[in-house]
Length: 343
Image (cartoon, one colour):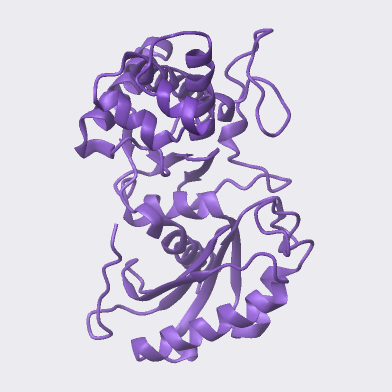
């Protein structure tokens, strides 16, 4: 989605800054008390450089955004920061993110707070995105939600009330590593364990399963593409499914079946009001026929495997904030921390 901004005159204090760190880009927004954006930008992460360099760049961008919003740092109540894991949230350390090699074992929360001069609330990036959807997105009318992000991997966040479930060791809400297959032929997750949801419901898994079935001899319109290039993309598979390719559609709908298994496990553990599906692999979302078909198949799988009352009441929908969810959620978590402290 394109970021919509409001003017200083429209905004309601206090103000918060949300910082969403990804493997390729860092997104920063200045947000008012209702979750509306006054100013926003993104810039390359440059993850091969050290974390101190990133802190300097983030601080410079924050100052620029505040100036463009007509705000001073004294009007900012707090900063929210979301980064990829692994991390030690209690200590405020980013530990060993695979997609940002220059950022290792660094006290990022403390250093950012010192640089900006404001308290920093630290969270896993997926939890931050989930909080964004909970606060001002698809989940804004629900008291609790689980967000599942479908992309290269499978991530997620769990929000109950204003609480983001981080866990004792900062591994809470790792929904991609729920085990959905305990059979001897269970697929291997990139983490090295068999049968995890990520091994079945990620874009990487969709591509791998499609290639395996083509190589096993099943007819597919993508065979020539695979022969010529030696690879496929998730978009090519989705487009083939839209065009009526039986194999591509079967792989996508089977993905929905596995996703439904994971959702039911979460429902029986947490009993959330809503399940929100985000990430790049949404097959066009609720406005696209393939996205509608995928979501329908997920709901049918959930209906088959959960209790009738839960099946009747659970809301399962696509996320609505797109790439804005992370910085909005990070800002929202800073806001929630301020409220919990009684400020």
